[in-house]
Amino acid sequence: MKKALALILLFFCLSNFSYSQGKFVVQNKKRSDKIRFKFINNLIIIPVEINGVELSFLLDTGVSKPIIFNFLNVSDTLKIKDTEKIYLRGLGEGESVEALRSKNNVFRIGDAIKLNQDLYAVYDTNLNFAPRLGVPVHGILGFDLFKDLVVEMNYSHKYIRLTESEKYRYKDCKKCERFNLEFYNNKPYINSKVKIKNKQIPVKLLIDSGGSDALWLFEDDTLGIVSNKKYFEDFLGHGLSGSVYGKRSKIDEFSLKSFVLKRANVAYPDSTSISHARKFKGRNGSLAGNILKRFNVIMDYRNALVTFKKNGYYHEKFSYNKSGIELAHNGVRFVKERENYISDNNLSNETNQNGTKIVFDARYKFSLKPAYEIVELRIDSPAYRAGLKNGDVVLSINGKPAHHYTLQEIMYMFYDDDGKRIRLKVDRDDVILNYTFQLEDFFK
Image 1 (cartoon, rainbow, N blue to C red):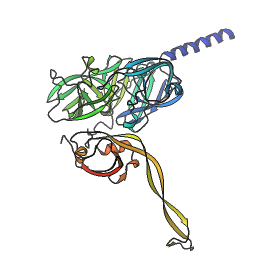
Image 2 (cartoon, rainbow, N blue to C red):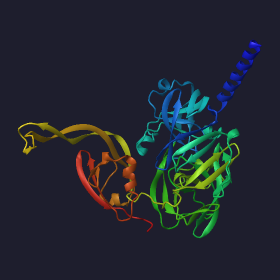
Image 3 (spheres, helix red, strand yellow):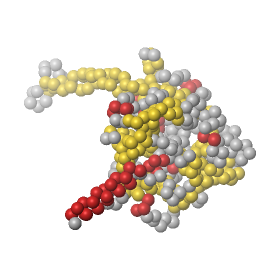
Image 4 (cartoon, one colour):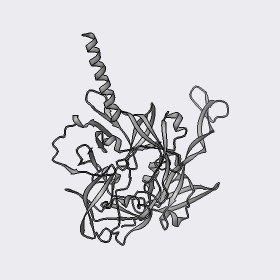
């Protein structure tokens, strides 16, 4: 009897082991787990453990493969093996990038674990999101997680919930809208509508949680998807194959059934940057973070469903960078800081009731602080006309040292109200310069 029981237990363990090898499994009694995330520039950054190493990944519905970027000694640190060289292609004007495909990696996200996950390591030093976001980001994860689990992205409370499909139960929600998903190359698409020049146009959009903009549309005269006369050329972001540029503008409305967002931001990427994306002929653009964040979203790939429920961000005004400056964290710089040192000696003019003399002695220390560099500058923007240049390192903003702010806090200042005055002190090739400009609302 004991031998038979032992064999049954062995079979049960082996069955569970085999099952967890092929997919993400939530290893707790509830078969569900909540994971807090960092919310940076409309993007979700989640903690991911790979082969026992804790990293930070961008949660991106727009990628079909987990990719790790610019991680030194990745083969040794993550103990990856069974590698083969491949080439990956994505958005941008450049060529395909070289990567190493590794098999049999152990991924853990909270209580969710997968034992034989493929991983694609890209060694191109230009593909590094951390400088633009100001926080460590080691890679991107998408389809492999979403296909196995129901993923709730709660933007308002900054957490995701991972639940095994068999255990997930939908709640009645009169204020929700649910859509069927379509898939192409393991990426989710949704049918929605845009209103351009007072014309309602049905569009098929990639749901792209890895994009920080609101909406990208691919211009198509035959469908009426064209920018209006009020637009400006701008840097739109980075793809796997390089930088993406295009037009920024506004549309009359964007609709998800009963949810209607007016005067939403839109970008029209140039044709060379999206040649790879347009291989799917039915695609009209992307639905990205600045709209997704206005909802709490349930992604259910198993049943090909997505559910939207509006949250506290829903009525937030659509804004954009009114300065023309894009900053990035570019290493560190030595900063001389004053610190007050209190001591007893005969040099002070201050004497307390006990006759003790106290001197406040100004002393200084040198510290390493983050350096914020201008990496993109929109032509004819307020900052451009003021004389700022790419490569300038920002030392202070409105009289306060730049290192007292996070990168995102500085960037948020550039989204402020029309007419807001910005004073920048910059280091340009070891020459200290001062500039002043006012934010301008191009669409006002």
